[in-house]
Image 1 (cartoon, rainbow over the protein chains, first blue to last red):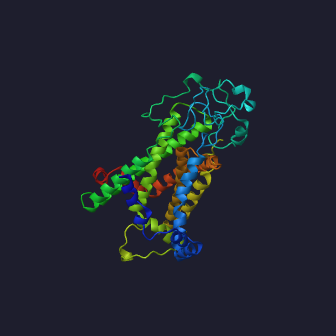
Image 2 (tube, one colour; image 1 turned 90 degrees about the horizontal axis):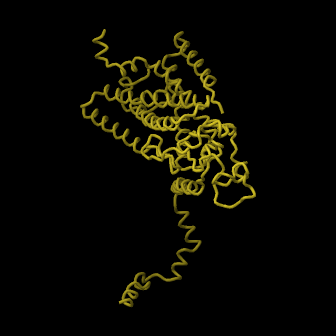
Image 3 (cartoon, rainbow over the protein chains, first blue to last red; image 1 turned 90 degrees about the vertical axis):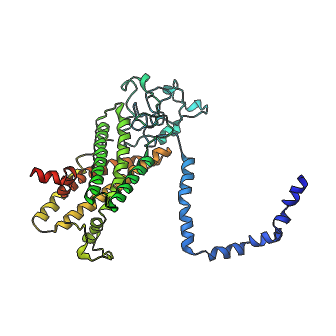
Length: 292
Length: 111
């Protein structure tokens, strides 16, 4: 049986014309060069550009580090972003502290932090010091100034408003919310095209949603800015950040919808300010939606 | 880092008042005044939302970039500008905004 299979799957039977010489001649430098020169330049550039996202993804996965993405140092409870995690219970986000390592590099361990469960590496500390940007970092805030360290670890509830706080991702609903909004727009657009929904109503619905998005993002953003400026730290910070992001999704998608609805006034910006001329198939005197 | 809230707003308030007064004095067309501010709101939106999106990706993938703090700073500053220019946008399109908030029929019946 085995012999039969072997004989049927033998190289000679599967590829009767294939020989080592043929393969080497086909893959010869000259052949490859001639094939490559035959490919048009445009196609080459496109192929090269199409690899960028994959390279970026690949480099991202390798460069993923357990450090603060904002570059903050010693970010106290409840933290400035939903990734806040405090395994050691020292009142500071583990990501904002130096990279937790499993190596036993005791020579570089800071004695003041030796009671914590993670060892610290001095070289990392020197490179991740706060540059005075972004949320204040507050490296000078000592643990006794912050809230009780026993309450530093927030409940790991995936269904809560905070998103996932366990450091395994922020769990913002970017894609579902985007798809729901786009689906809703396509639905109302279909109704409008079929004459079931009036143009004004269709516009009104999406203008209202856009306003909600802008108001939500703006208000939560201003609250967050005040909180950072005034150094207010509450358990609500992460919840506000979460809603800031979700409202921003509505705002961004809503803005693109707004541009689609008001496409002609949008084109007019470039026509009026820069003198661009767009090919209009319709009679320009009958064009709708011109700016005031 | 303390974010400036007043300082980035001043040139935009001044600029809006300037173009608005030029339009009222009939030195520029209304379309020019409107389109200048439409362009500004578009640019503020692009930068602020773009920076916000990049920050979101950075957090999702837990990537640390050297420009992250600067990106966050400009996201906030341009966000403040965007909020302010949105108010101007409402002022420019006040009639449409009123229609959006209160149905035209109801307004007619109230009048």
